Amino acid sequence: MNSWATPDRRILVNFAEPVMALFEYHTQTLPSDCEAGGLLLGTVHGSNISVIEATVPTAWDKRFQYLFERMPFGHRTIAQARWKASGGTVRYLGEWHTHPQDYPRPSGIDRIEWNKLSRKRADDRPMLAVIVGRKNLYVELVPRAGIGSVLTSLK
View 1 (tube, helix red, strand yellow):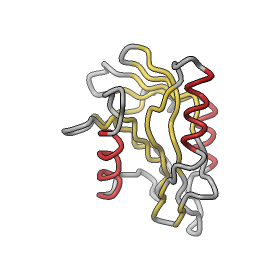
View 2: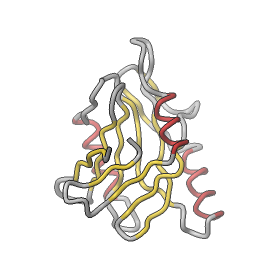
View 3: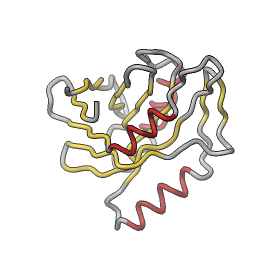
View 4: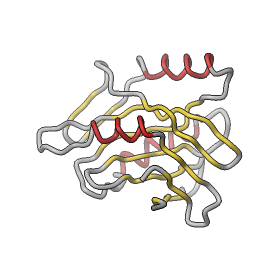
């Protein structure tokens, strides 16, 4: 479940093992578990993306059973530090959060937020959006405008 691709297989997204472990750790397995989320950081190699780090929820983030609102504090500092330390190769790729579903799907609120965030991208690349469910991930590349590309797992 580490590699995902667009239907035409022109774009490949690979998640590093520590990122997958972080997703698993924050999976909402109990009814009382709150949603979690953060930023996705990594490198771009042509049309391929390597997600090498994900930030974790901070004390400032708003976490409820059916809602996660990421606050900029902490997440932005980490992203900027990784960018600077890597000489501009490790960058903001997108966002992740959990849903209390086996096979998650984006809500209307998710779509609105993703579109806002995608329009803010300085590099004009689509934003990577990931929802972590109990049994699977939902992975999408969200462009500035139009319909995104839903990726499928390469097994």
